[in-house]
Length: 169
Image (cartoon, rainbow, N blue to C red; front, top):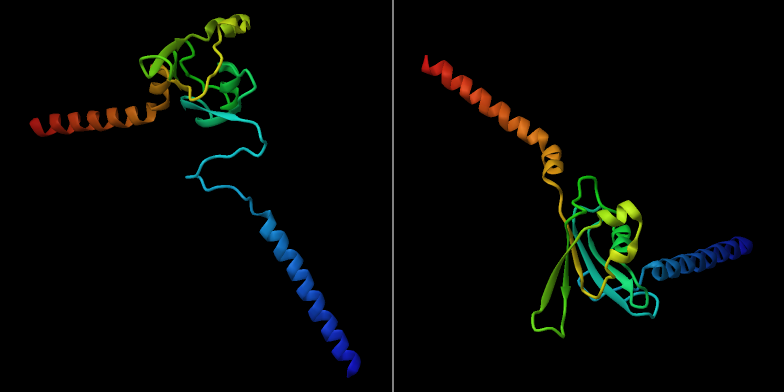
């Protein structure tokens, strides 16, 4: 009986220590990060600049780029997964905040076709803090994407016209 008590005591102590180890691992596995509504603090100590990408790209949103790097528009589009098929790459809008100017924002229109044809990055602008890039979808791409909706509308209107013609006679 004495050996059974020792075995039980050993089992309880082992279970408690294993539970404590597992529990402490679970606590440390939770990231010590702020919630999404809080400020974003990068893991490395370098300064990061927020930039925004809106529109017809794979992953639109806000990105943090290192302050020390010279990130251009093409690199930023790559961070966003690249443009989607049908994106207007000849008319990209870049809204830039200028605190030293009289007006608070300046809008640039950028055409990336030359870069795509030649690979020359001299015409591609560098990204600055709080830049917002807007890439629109072309009209025909939008029509193609929404063609099933348009077909449904045409079907309904054709049916309504046929019903109208039948009731008229």
